[in-house]
Length: 289
Ligand code: ZN
Ligand code: FE
Image (cartoon, rainbow, N blue to C red; front, top):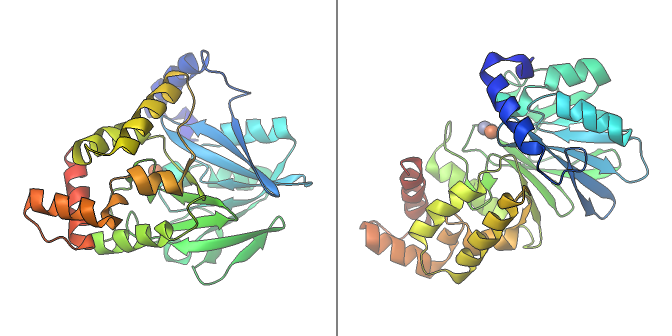
């Protein structure tokens, strides 16, 4: 089991010590949406696992279970039984508890058809074309390759579960795809309503904002976000979820959509000012940051 792994025992110990000072409600934060509630659970060093609780039901959906313990604890407290696990991609910090949860709750594992050989316990392989209904909730699947070849995002009304594609003020590293692919994935997400809440899979926002500050110095909305994010982390609160509108205004990778930003960056770096070139260069710069 991942939480017994010697590599993580230190991380867990540090988390426990840290958590004691946090205003936790049993180790979780909740966010209300129309018809469902999202419960946010911290896991490992900086992962978030999400439980989606449809109204008036005893079931829940689990997004990207890195480890089983927080999920089992939360389900016990909330008196909910997971019926499905939704994986955004195959990496272990998103699928580590698939088998344990399946064994314990007999739930079904959902993931991209591209990842059918790499997601532990996969039962239902999906692609971007077919929306599904689970727990009475309509779930849209958005293909977002780039971080991995089979990365997908799940959209439930105004809640976007985007795994390691779009982060608070950042985006995922390109491990299996190309910069072109990653850019078109981010662009696809950028066209959702700006009120969409962005539930990404990691608390990377502060580090991402450090980078953003270096490439987008004159953005007053960015300075404001940095202040707010630092204050939240100082009080032990998550910076996630954010909203798509905040990401459009302050996430350097989505700022590529802004003509002035793009032109300025392209001139500074002596590159062409087309979206893909600027995005690819920014991603490269961030990798070395
Ligand atoms: Zn990943
Ligand atoms: Fe991850």
